[in-house]
Image (cartoon, rainbow, N blue to C red; front, top):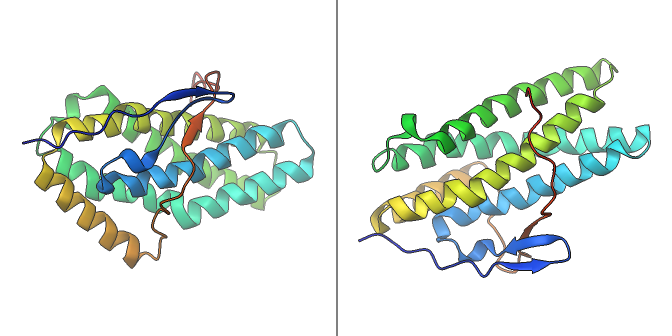
Length: 199
């Protein structure tokens, strides 16, 4: 018997549509909690691009710090904890959303290392950082609207329980914080920029 995810209480707000990650099965809440941080990084980058050089430096430092403390671990957990369990129920190689997810992972890893190199050598990185922020936001949107519903649809209750235990063990081992229960709903602006044409 498959666990049925509650229907999201989606609603329109001044900033677009929103949903509460706590309505996910506990197995998925940690990753959705990380997405809230990723959206804040993406928003900070977009604001900095319209600001001063100092703003851009701060956004770059925040992005690198986010990657070191959360982003890299988040991607590893999805690839080594989440996807192997989903593979039991779904042929991943033929799923376009999963393939896009993995392509995003490869792009984000590559881009953040290039940005770090440019940052250290004081070379211009505004376009690189802008593209990173847009792909990061698109990636979160993909996982929240396509990947997580797919998991909820295909994984059994036992699968989700196993996933929750493994995810929690890894999060504790890496010293990553658990999601608070009073976290505000994750929000997307309906007009958020799409993927760059050639990431």
